Length: 195
Image (tube, rainbow, N blue to C red):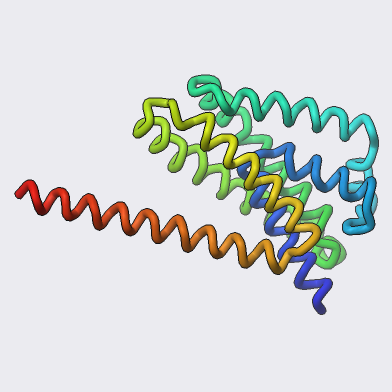
């Protein structure tokens, strides 16, 4: 039962991190499957362990990381990634959720598509425009770097310690909610002081 829950939680974590960066979680899964026993990929997903695939993922990941740091280029990159990140999430969900893929590969791919697509949409249509507008584009490289680091950490934890990953994600959601609520209250005080 623990393996089932871990597989499902890991699948959700991997597809969520694909919403931030499509290639980091794919590369993490490829390398962990190639060099460790933490994840075993069944056919056709075992193709991710091929050296050509690993090399291509490394190159594409580097291109995405660089493009995502440049304020104007990152908008074009996000538009292109609108199609790639959900597909990466679907692949990761189906490849890692052994129990779900045994039942229905289509259902697991739909779950991954929805999770990665939701994270990508929140990032590119909500968070990034606010950050770009409030920092005049200066904060984009920093936020992009934090997203890449978060995608890598969540990807590794999703495979190695999926329960810990879920706890960290909930903690992160709580911290962001607390910060936004605190910021809203300080703005309300400023507006009350002006009236």
